[in-house]
Amino acid sequence: MDKKTKIILDGHYRFKIFQDLRQKNIPVYYVDYFDQRIILDSWKEKKVTKKEVIKTVKAGKLFLNKTTKHMFKIKGRLRHISQITPRVNFNIKILKKKK
Image (cartoon, rainbow, N blue to C red; front, side, top):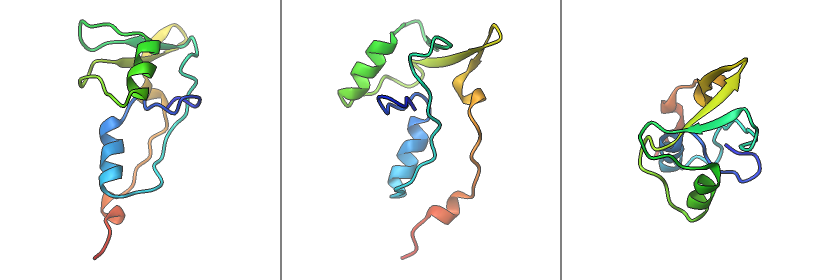
């Protein structure tokens, strides 16, 4: 998640699951989206810019699945942003509300 704009860069489906489970606290990892080490690529042929991503998300819209691929440049190598963030593992069953 970008620390300035609070837009989700990766994990929209996980976020939706947390919302469906009515969770108020969702673990996130904040980055500076305009850090030069964060490279915006695409899984598809259509290329978008970081400014287009922010504008689209602020308008309440999402790109089609796998439109954006956020990469992080470390020591000259590109790694997907999900590979540089800490993992948060827990049993999702504990999040279900008991009736």
